[in-house]
Image (cartoon, rainbow, N blue to C red):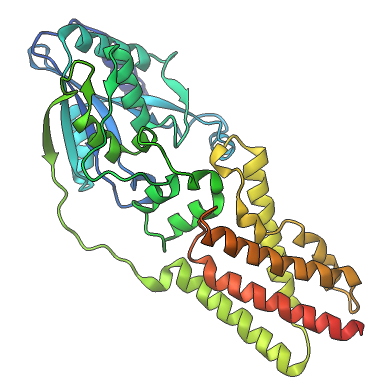
Length: 391
């Protein structure tokens, strides 16, 4: 009971401190903080914050967007539907820096070129945003996240035309390529992303849209200028530099290795069936059940949620939802003639998927390569097997 009371008092005090605005002095600084990637998937893309520092007021606070509340009602269902509200968080900067440096993540700072009025307006805006009634917003990974909020708030506060000039060596990439820059393509995180997100993220992102990633907030802010030619950033400095450490990348746990083993098992059973002129029913039940369930899941993401990036997902060409219908035919000793035509369609769909991949309509998870090859061979064998039974 005492612990709960202490916690309530702390939360009320914390909210009160960060929700009160004060008049900043002329020596106050407004800076953009960029945190480098972390170890896990949820922090692999980095983070951003806005720091308000005024030594004369003993004020040093980091405001950051992209915080979520696990205690929110129906958290997991809303997250799955893409309807989860995120919120702005606030921390004493020493605690903020300690948190990320303890995770061995690079922390860089850029001092914004703002006048006294703009600094005050930024502080007032963030404090007002932090109030409970204003704190929540509907999160979008590509268009409204912890990084884009920093860019948008800066543009709104300055009320000036900011020119985001291309950094040196900048090359435009697709949204998926930008993800792959931060996540190993042969990792389970990348596999899940490439499976769940459709071809809409394979289009080329504009230079402005690159700023959905914290790294590009840093790079574009560094070269940004006002309409009068003045730089947006007056000073850049590193507050903590990541120390080199060994990263475990065991291939035997990777999608390519795991699905490679599964593919070898499918091919071994298929070869055994070919020699004995029979069909292993349990394997076909697993394959058709698995592919249909994955397909139904992808359809639900596309049409049943607000995840716009899940649209037009051509993984449905191999994870075909209608495979669930064929399951009922697999139990029978004699199959209908349409099943052979259906199997031919499945082979054609895998060929179409390969063409989509080659011409760049959608990039797929590399871990799928052995599985797709094994599925195609299994389908071709089943066509041959069923045809021999119907002649």
